[in-house]
Every structure is written in structure tokens, then in C-alpha cells.
Length: 85
View 1 (cartoon, rainbow, N blue to C red):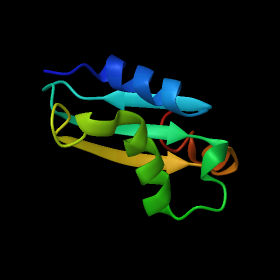
View 2: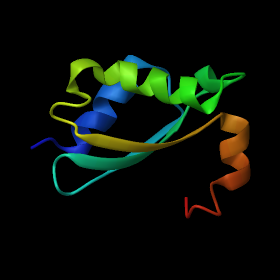
View 3: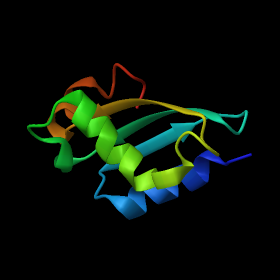
View 4: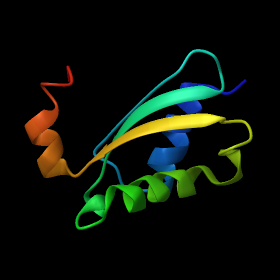
């Protein structure tokens, strides 16, 4: 079983982030929000791939699923209150 806090740590270690929130209590299925300036000008699929790259071989193995919402800092400023942050 894998911990959400460890996924958060790995993402923050692997790329510059303004905000990371990871949740999941069964140890294999997780959801998350990642906010990074690195996402500027990238399609959502490329944003998600950048996050998955920080987790390497854990994806599909220890981490069975990670459902992501990714935002640039500007977009995050617009939507964060709607998402409860």
C-alpha cells in the first residue's frame, strides 16, 4: 500500500509546484490537484504526463490509478474557491 503523502512528496520533489493536494485511502487509487507554472502553454495530457513522470515506475505498479486535475497558477487563482481551497 502506498501513502498519499509520499505521492505528494515525490511530485513536489520532481517538479516546481505552487500547490499539490493528493488524496486516497485505499493505498492504490488516488486523486490529486497539481498547480505549476510548468504547465503554461501545455495541453492537459502533457501536463498530466509531466506529473506522472515524477512518479516513474510507481505508476501502474504501486500506484494503480491517479486521477489528476492540473492548473497553471493563473487558472488556479480563478477556480480554487470553487473547488474549496
